[in-house]
Length: 566
Image: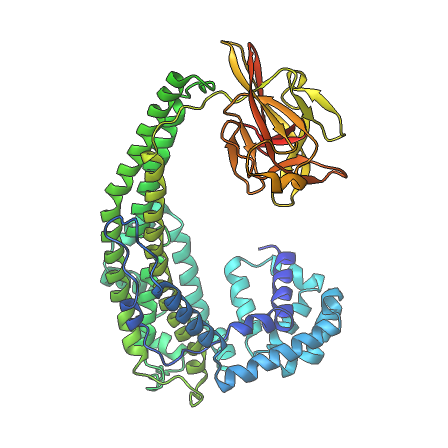
């Protein structure tokens, strides 16, 4: 490692003691006295068959709320020791930020750390001193001449407090020999052939090899024990059982193996893969869009795309049982994995009466294990929810499949129809082209808006019948005299009988089905839209060429009246 990189790394770690760690310590937590296992039995099971009347059970929201409350309780829980440490870090962090530590030079940071860091839990005076030494070019040159193994040994010795057991151990020749043996082994492991052979050895064979390697460097069991001061590790007190930590380690390892997915997600991925394949098959043959009025062409397209809808429905039916089986299997597997940890966790106490530092350090791990169990319940809850979503998707798709074929008829205007533009002008519809901007209507704001023409349809295959609507004149229908005051000055609108007229309620009614009682929208003064009504409807002959616009808003104004773009 380059010296300047090593210096920067160490300095960053030291600054983190005052700046980063105050926030990281906030993650310190302790478990709550709650049995997580019953939550698995409260998981709502996914549907085993598609059901149009199926509703998501209220248990989803209830369990999700309980999981959130438990997670928050664990995250907020603190032992007295954790609380004191957290408060100390926060206080020091606030002081460092107020002093502008992030804007100081490296030398100023060192001075600040030496002056103010002693009161902080975990402060390492040797680390601060080492970082200060690393700014000396002569010291850097000394490190540069060392091998990686020598650097590691030297830095480890420097970081140990004077007179501490760690310092005595790192100064012991046996410790240095052990490091040399370790360095040789790591070098061997870089060889793929050696690594493959090592992984095939039994545990006994591996132990025998390591003993031989230690003897090669002048070490034996007696020297190793002497190096450690012949101290046997103390047995953990009953307050924090070794069994709980072992169960936690095995549980984490088991779930870590599922980082790439589990049985349920694999079935999900298979379904998504087949659906995507079906989509690509459908898009591989793009049928030309059938024109309005071309019922035979439209029917051909309808039948083509409908077959893919049926195949999608069949895939949903095929995978629903597989998803159910995978969900139940995953639930049983997860419960089996977490049960040993929950069992051991229930046997111990993890409160303020923990005295040894080693015991205090594992409280956070135990809490992390409990959070992991909650996350597994949450994951299974999400899997079950996904199957309920699949049920809804199935019936949304089935609704499309069951919809009968309906030919899209011609909906058009003669060439002289006048289309409103945003600047207040009106142009004949025959002069409008795709890309032009006309005046449309935004139903959310209730105001006219510019809208772009995305398509122009021109039909000239036959003589197209037309009707003339009189909009806004005095009523001529019997029984509507009371509505006289509501009608505006007359506007004549000529169009095909089936062209949609947009009402105030957002409906699109055919021109030959519009009633005098329907509210029609018409351009008024000051760029406003006003309500008017149908007054009369008469046949208007026919036209050999008719036109229709498709706009981004789905509507436009003709003779001041709002019409649909289809």
